[in-house]
Length: 107
Image (cartoon, rainbow, N blue to C red; front, top):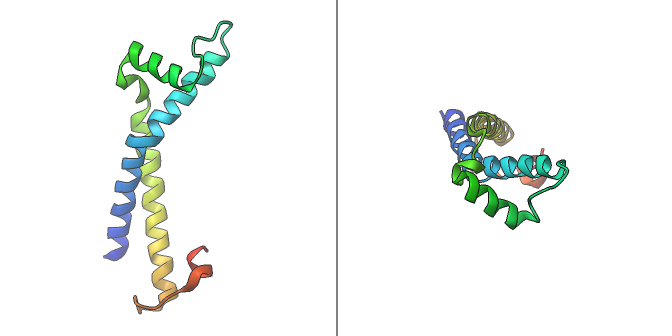
């Protein structure tokens, strides 16, 4: 049961990070790379580029590829949380108050 809760927690974390951080940053990065490969780049820097993208395409212009980002980040974090939770339970040997130490935490 706690493994499934961890999986859902990871899924929620991944979806949140996809929506709030990953998708906008990746979309802006790709647009910047494409712009810099043009003969006459139109973005003069990060803030100018973001302003221009939002002015021309709206906030939706920073969310292209959102579905793919949600699927990737959601599944990635769900697997990470599930795996961490199960490894922690294994090392605690059934005693969830047992400290597993720094080294095992970072494994």
